Length: 185
Picture: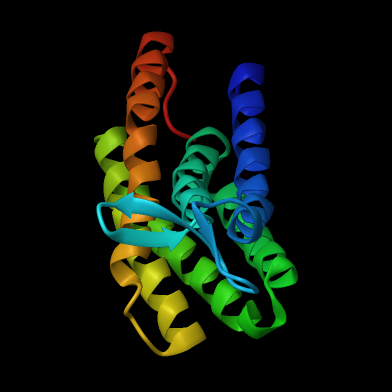
């Protein structure tokens, strides 16, 4: 493994880890509307609001894929385990189980979809795994935390925007890897 590839992998790993505290900070501090004692919300589509932290969750799904691409499956599993622990540690007490479970389940689904697709089509792998992971994350979190899927459209759309915004960078990474003759880890 080249030093550049390893450095890129560790940068993706650090960024992945930082998405969790960033999501928690955003939920409590940044949005177009912040409910007293509740989450800060942002518009994700006309008439559809979501907690601002969903942006970081969408980004986390893409970054986990990049950790796996650069450092391999072992690092990806370690990142999921560490991220689950960080998520449980940072979540408000009432949401610890929902936050940690949703993170573990969604990142595992992301990995399961990404792994077989990555060598054939990186952009499709990131898109498909991101969509699978964000839908599972949204459903798991809402059901475990609230037993209600009323906020599902906002959760899904907010996360999807970040996956879609990352795809041009993923395409650029794929092209750069092909030019340099780099294969996925």
